Length: 364
Image (cartoon, rainbow, N blue to C red; front, side, top):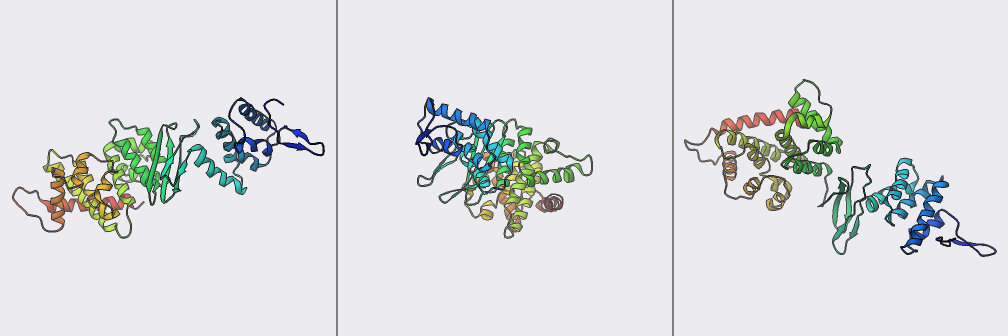
């Protein structure tokens, strides 16, 4: 028949066969044996209509069809068959393998080029899927996290020897918070993607901010309750806590105290310094030691104000001067003069705040 391809011969008369034969029919477009054009398009219509009228009871047959239609740029049909495979929850061995494969190559459109040290992606998120993400995508010696969201408008590729999804989520939250008009709904959506982070957020808000009053039960309520400034503080502290190991625990604890001490001093004695910038400078002041990387490399990836980056890189500004003073106080090498604030008072207050924070937030 017109538009069909021969899929075999009927023995003994060797009569050509072009009727629908399930795998034998879609093998031709699946392997690219036919050329693009009206005939191939008509043949794909024939496969789809034939299968819809006589769907196979065998889930293995369904696993081929997403590849068949996605490879010919028929994403709606490809997604329909893929959704059936997903919803089947079948224990058939090929199902789990093909689900991961379809997400990687079809939904996220990942095409690695290891010799060329490159990766390309083409997002094909259907309207009903807000985001899709794959972690630990190995390309050569690189370990990648690939994510598409916002109707395929946003693509994220994170490089690193070890990808931390929760850490990545916190960085995305901080990027949104850094915008002139942050979107609370978007921030809540980002946090909700992590069960661990959602739990910590709700626990922190209800323990530290509500203190027994009406219980906050949704992430969007929690973000609105604490406001942008406290949301930034909480996110930066969670990010720092994510870096903690048994070796760096005490150093991180000291960094938090340093940050709070700098914030307290700036709020009371330095009118041209933003107290929150002082806090961030302090908590990240030992980041190079904690991660064993150069501060220049780390600062380039931090979503912080330029003045904070400059201070962390040692540039001469008021924040850097404050950091140097606090570091000297910790090392008992500070030069005391009559104009200097009572550093011991700020230090004790910062320790008390840190202990309260550890007790109420970090033991979740």
